[in-house]
Amino acid sequence: MILTENKSSLGLAAGQTDIVSQVKDALLDITNDAIIVHDLNGTILLWNQGAQKIYGWSAKQSVGKKHQAILYDDDDLEQLEEPLQQVVKTGKWQGELNQITKDGKDIVVEAHWSLIRDNYGNPCSILTAATNITDNKQLQAQLLHAQRLENIGTLASGIAHDLNNILTPILAATQLLPLKNPNLDAKSRELLKILADNSKRGIDLIKQILSFGCGNQDKRAVIQVRYLITEVLQVARQTFPRSIEINMDLPTKDLWTISANTTQLHQVLMNLCVNARDAMPNGGTLKLAAENLYVDENYSSMNLDAHAGSYVVITITDTGCGIKPEDKERIFEPFFTTKEVGKGTGLGLSTVLSIIKNHGGFINVDSEVRKGTSFKLYLPAVEATVTQVNQEAQPLAGQGELILIVDDEESIRKITSTSLETYNYHTLTARDGIEAITLFAQYKSEVKAILLDLMMPSLDSMTTIQTLLKINPQIPIIVMSGLASNEITSKLVSTDVQAYLTKPFTAWELLNTLQQALN
Image (cartoon, rainbow, N blue to C red; front, side):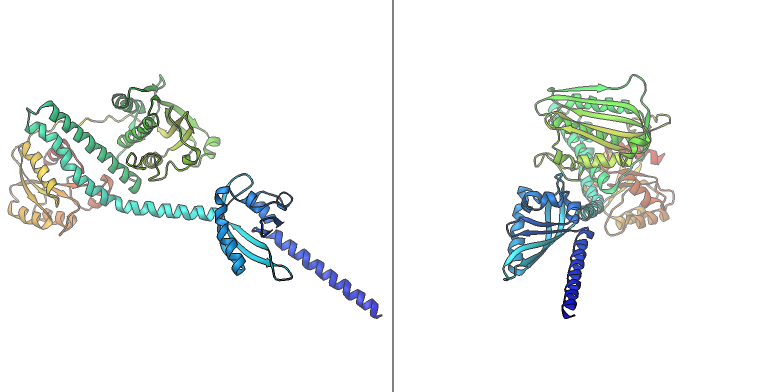
């Protein structure tokens, strides 16, 4: 009887042990985390289904192999030194590890290491529980990137304001000096041209900062890209080295029209052409092509930025050095550049992408190292009449009108005053809103128009404008600013302002805007 009871007890105990073992095995395989046991030399002893899901290796393929060999690149092995030392010393370690999967994909895991001891208390193996946090890390990176863009966007207007105040007098002076000195020698005129060209390069950089940082969108028109491509290629042929062959491939029949900001699209094409030029220091071929293309539902489903419909596709191809695969994923990141220090801002391609996306389009890039690169710009087609762009008219001389100029920058006041006086206007200048109101109250019957900077100290421009209009509700007011025109419009929506000038402006733009306001 006692023997039977003992046998029953032993059987029950064995059954319970078996159940516990099954439960442990089930728990190991239920979890999505990787549970791995390896000895102190790194030989894998246990490998659960979670590990197979994360890394791609089955238990049969991994057990008996070194975890250093199948989970890490050689360059990442150094990261294991500290965890191993700490787990042996304290019994535990927790942290992030860079690892690889069976197919070579880089991943990041949150790992928990626990030291396992034998029956004599000696360290014998390490238990690892690892969670794949790659997606979370990417989301964090995107969030940080978005915050960085937001911060840059906040700073962009202030940066543009300061830079535009610097460039405005320089650009205007390059136009006025030949007029004030008609006998200027050819060398001096060439130097002025260089000064003007470099000022315009600075203006382009400011536009890039505003476009990428603030989502700048100016007025758009329905255009035919054939003329824009022809214009860009003409500039390239005049300025690029002769070792670069420049070709154009446009269809004989008309391309579809698109709705675009011509300045921004010109900027996009020039950026890509300049990048192509820089990729061919020893010469090569640059080709611009365009075609009509209908994107169907099948293709659009494979590209997140694409929508089914009609597109005009502009292709810029070079036979240069190409883009490395590891760089290709980053070329549109702000401030990323493969150029030497001082030879590139890293804003070019991020601006290109921003502009194309703002136009409802998308970009595809194909590149092969030492063979060349091709950028395809997909821009939505529209059915409308092409808008004719008016050329800037030559300014007419004034009739001796008195103009009040209000700006906190002395250089802006001086160059604006000189520009107007050269064309038979008289001027008064004020440094801030308070001084402007005082002068206008004194000369309200003589002053025929007011040029006023949007950002000034002492008294804000909105209050200044309202006060000036109370003195004379009919006085034409022109606002000058380094902000994008749509930003100015939003600030002035509640005021009766005649016109605005976006800095940096040329002397011609200043004079033509003033004449329109006076008329």
